[in-house]
Structures are given as C-alpha cells and as structure tokens.
Length: 241
Image 1 (tube, rainbow, N blue to C red):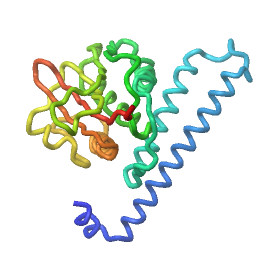
Image 2: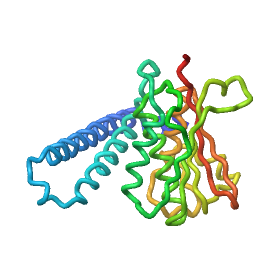
Image 3: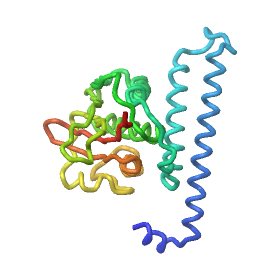
Image 4: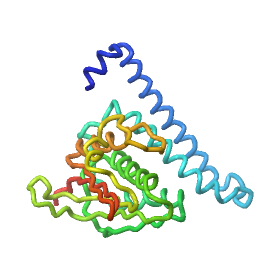
C-alpha cells in the first residue's frame, strides 16, 4: 500500500509530506512545553492564586496532554522510536496518570479501575504506551453513551501460547457500543473510518496504536458484542526478574 501511494503522488510530494509531519509534531510539542511553563509559573505563585480561576488549573494539564499526544502521533506516524529506547515502565502509575486526565474531562463518566498497584514493570517506550492508552480511552468516551461506565483493567496475561507468557494485558471496556465482525477486520487499517461514524477523526488512532504495541513485542486486539459492549486489549512484555 505504501509503495502504491508513493507511486500515485510522487516521491517529491511524499518527502514534503513527511517533512511537514515532522515540523508539525515539533511545533505541537513546543506549544505543549510553553503551556506547561505557564502552568508552572502560575503554580509557583507568580500571580496571586485567588485572582486565578480554579478551572484554569484543570484546563492547562488537559491542553498540555492533548498537544503532546498530537505531536507524538504526527512524529511517530513516520518516525517510530527504535526498540533500543525501550526502558522499564511502571504500568499502574502510567494508567493512573492517563485516567486522571480523562476524569477531569468528563466528571459524569464513571471510570472503573481494576488492576493492582504492584503490577510488574514492563519493557517499553513510556510515551508510546501512553499514546495507546490515550487512543483507547478516547474511543471509549466517544463511542459509548454519556454517563455509562468505562472499565480499565490490567493483570498478568494468562495466555496459553508461549508467546503470551511473561506479559501483562491491559484492556479498556465500554458498554453500549458494538463493532461487527466485518468492522473488526478493518478498524486497524490506516485511514479507515467506520460506516456511519459521526465523530471527528482521521482513522489513524487504532492503526498507530497497533503499530506501537507490536513494535514493543505485544499485540492489540478487539472483542465486541451487542450485549457486553466493546473491549480493546493489548499485551506488553514484563521485565525479567
């Protein structure tokens, strides 16, 4: 598919597009750093706290996170981080931090946590794993009815195959949405948008998420039924003792 696309638009235009993505990602990350610096100044009392609306302290972290995710999405779409940069990651802490952002976005949405605080550390790229979690949680919020619960769970993966041994599994489940078998075979394709989807997006989130998980030695899949809703789950290797 990539070769056909290159032939259709020409190598020069493809290089321009890649350069644009890199520049866009760096610009977004620069904006995120600027907003974070502003938040730090406000938090250190450079202005009297009573003169600052409390909502501002909630909005700024959301804005920083959104800019960071957009920046890394653009960057990683064409320039994935090599496996050599993978380091120990505390999955429980990472999930907690990601959930906190979404809790601020929608206080009426129950977010149910189902994982121990002492999950074993995994080997991976923390920013890439954060993007995967962000994508899956964003989809759960967008494609399920308001005020319905979202469950995020994690545990050691008890798979039967040898490939699955020594991994943890992280899942995000929402009720009230259903992905048909036909759609399940397509939703991880680049630029694919489901039939009748009325939510904004480019069809890149799930494609990029699967790529990032597979780069780190895991797998990302979906299970869905009209009665039980939809679960996206992915595995990542545990660091050997």
